[in-house]
Length: 150
Image (cartoon, rainbow, N blue to C red; front, side, top):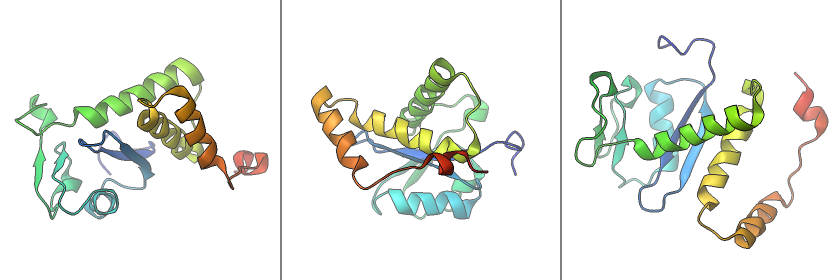
């Protein structure tokens, strides 16, 4: 495991530059198999992939450009990851500004999904946002026991 990740829950995400939509989730590792699997699941086969310099992205089997933050490179022509980094920043501000407490690894996926949903609906008017949220709730429930076990 990379230095700095020990004891941390790992998440990854992608932001579609055409639609502005974010897909994000908790992952178990930053290895190539995991990151490339995420890319294959959420991106169209002809999409260009823009990443940071993490080793797990080596071997992307499509057009790929990366920026090297270790040498203060944040933008090179179309290569930048500012969109998804902005999403993570919003999630962290929400965490510190709203919740103030430790978010357990067990529930982190739920918080990430909540913030991705907020991000993806942010340009809709309030009534459309409400209808979308209610529509996604149909047939779903989380019992208190599920939330508190383990």
